Image (cartoon, rainbow, N blue to C red; front, top):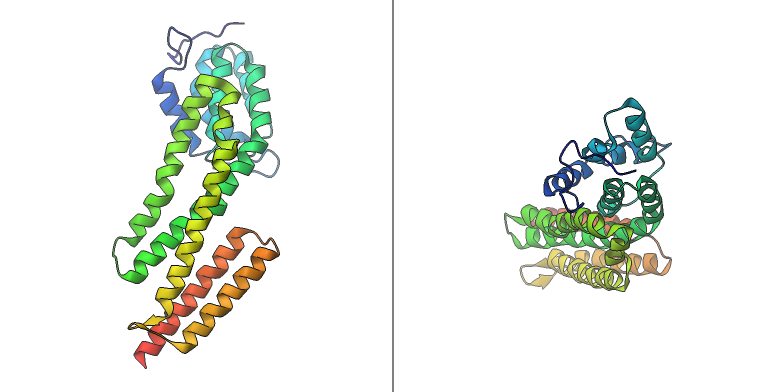
Length: 259
């Protein structure tokens, strides 16, 4: 069955219109707005797909079938979910809605693993530590740098997911689940580790010399981080512990300076 394009959602060549892509991109930010234990991101996914609803006709049966397709269980990384959204929208536009459903189900796992490693386990710690280092050095725009470091790749990949998924379907996800992304994760984590060491070094420095008490705290934090890594404790937990340790060092510095 060929879908009808009463809302101008597709162009004459059968591809999604640019305004439809923009609408899918904008709605993807609300993927987790109605997160629930039963379907997880299913309501958000159905909401994101609403710009494609015009392709399925105006009848109540067609709308009901559309919602039933896209209210099924779905859960993945919210940033890379746009690859699944784009693929499902492309399938709807091509008149193969079941292919879109299968695509989103098949992509949920790989996109979730890749996105969580990249954004939660690598990019978020890097952005946080960038802001911490700049704040310790004394730059007033440290918070802006933190937001920029995270959101530049975040927004780029979110937009890319819609465009690539709409153009190539489920195969587009190979862009973010291959060895290239794994290398990017490794490099990002290495950069975050370097910034963590730099932040601690700056925190224990007191006018160009090392404060012994803060040096002991820094050594203890490095030891705990090493043990945590050996025990395969998640990077997010290690990052939170390092952030807490940084707060201790900063407070210690203020108290020491006041005395």
